[in-house]
Length: 121
Image 1 (spheres, rainbow, N blue to C red):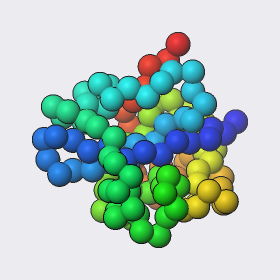
Image 2: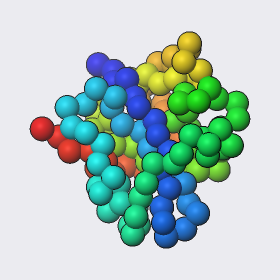
Image 3: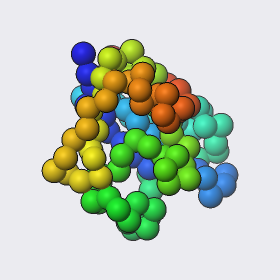
Image 4: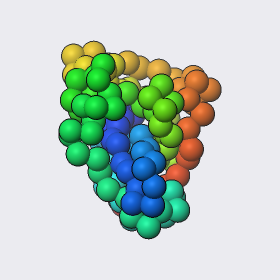
């Protein structure tokens, strides 16, 4: 079974580091910035503003960031439960195209960090 992913950009207060976070869009648990902070060993983690997304991802429609942070010089962190899905589905740089890829292929290409980013009910 596949999971439709939600990709977001977070930044930490400790450094100018930015991280592409990938989680299941329809997971029963909600994204948790406190868990992300712990996983990244940061003092503070916050969602990046839209203006920053436009600058970092000029080839993407606003809000259609793909889960390949390495293509933009960013670290990619995947919510651990996604690693158990056969396939993931994500925006293809626009809101009009979606890409379905096996999680194994994605992990082999991107080499993401794995962390618990959301609470599960």
